[in-house]
Length: 196
Image (tube, rainbow, N blue to C red; front, side, top):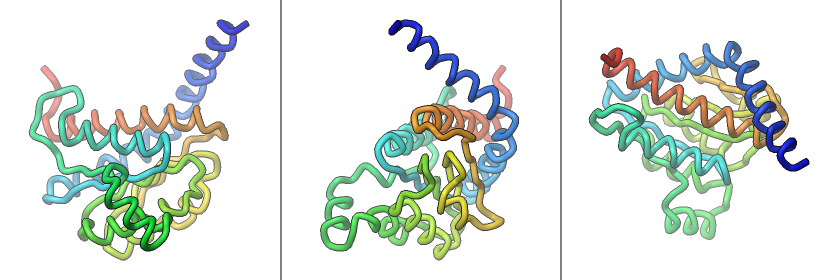
């Protein structure tokens, strides 16, 4: 019984990835273009999310600053989820919804990219970060699920929306991880060319 349930998890994840491949390849490619434009102009990528999405933010930043699968100089990326002193100070002195937006205001520059991750698209602090990024003339790459929520609704024509067509958080997060790996791989391809 348990083994069948585990197998079904694999099948459901694989089915969603197959279904999303065609739908998400264009927005992921658009995100690659935005990130390449930012990085090659000397900019940086800021990344935020809550819970599992915070882990995705840190994972992405680690692969950008360190490396993905190929050796290359580090790329400028910063997860806004990692500094507990900043997060707790802002949460205590202002509001939890300001923990990312205050960092975007302080660290973001025009031309930078914010990768905003929210499976529901309704996380208040991620929405505030996206609004702060717009004020700073940054591009927002939103990773959502379901209908895209409020985050999907506030995006502009210059932003990118990678919306996983599913309602279950675990499945959405699995595709977000794949989408971020695709982004890392394609950025490396653009910067380094094909691998010999």
